[in-house]
Figure 1 (cartoon, helix red, strand yellow):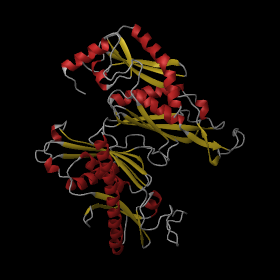
Figure 2: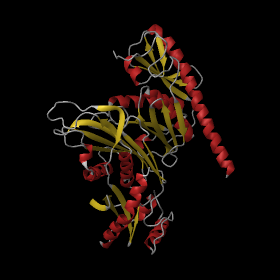
Figure 3: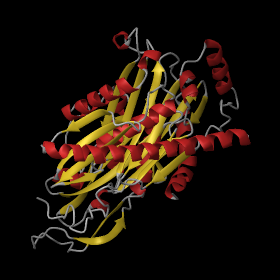
Figure 4: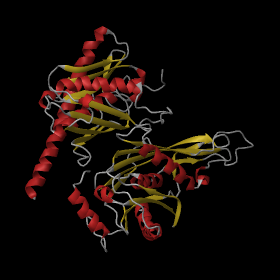
Length: 248
Length: 262
């Protein structure tokens, strides 16, 4: 057990937040307009990720061609310098099982949310570079993809917002950082818009079943808040673009 | 980038004429505008993000670790990752080998902490997108990230061979790393003209290319030729190598001082 106090009796966490507070959430879209069709840069706490959406375009391989819908491909690049200690693996991190698992989870989540049937015989390639990670990375990846897909103009049913929740004794803690993530059981949620529908639920640790409802409730509330933050950022961006266009 | 036959021939004639006319109106010695941000990764000792006006982008992180240099004398480790390319792709491997050779020119004495211990630098390069050969952009990125690198300040003794002690560092004071990293320039050759920093469209019609490295006011090894495309590559007049070297010698110090001022 770490010597740091994860949750003080006064109700404060290591970084000074209360149990139901999110981390700093800053985002911008259309950051790489030359390199991709849609892009976003997202800082959620100390997580920093760049998401690039390329497509829908004609696939290079015949095997990627689907007559009825677009093929969705997601590549996650967890850079070696993204953690505090540089990762020691000598070879490539690209084919590590954990990363393949994350990629599959993301594809399955977004396959249901993006209207892929509108883009038959094409491929949508999503590339994510994680420049820095500090807990709850999967949730951040979900938010980054949602923003970049909206920037790319790909039809989707609703926002998906991701967040991680930890359970410390009986208190659920919203939006865990890496220290908290290491100290307790965590759940990652992907929530559809303002609904209570979950499009992703990842639990890698043991969690008492009778606490799960509590954890999910605070998680869904946090995800709704993230959806609002993303929506606000997008609307601000759109406003700026409109005023730039009309000033010309 | 795919150009039609007519476009290619127009571009070739423009670049081959005297004086040469570049599609974006640049002089032969002129670079595309670049944007550089440094120190944006708090978990790295130094970092930089460099974006060229054609959308090529590269992120460099420098992390340091204390090692015993009596057993591990390789104090610089560089890894280049080009998005969309495999780790064993030709472009990735040739870039890595180029920079491995090049960074031998850095004065390793600057990394020494005590008689026994040194800092080992891990330089990780991530090329997010590139439209032409990225080596020049990567070298600018490495240059500015090493310039923005600060390392913890040593408070224990320099001489630690007699007294067995581990290096101790100041709680928050940092020392700026003072090294002069080399720069790499890519030059395009069209007929008898040579120009710096070829854009994607210029690469498409270039007869050949040159990689010239420079540090501290002089040209250094490696100097390489580089085929910029598969269709137009031809031999070139050897005098052009001289000309290219002169061009780099003349303008490189300006570029270095511009990068230094960030």
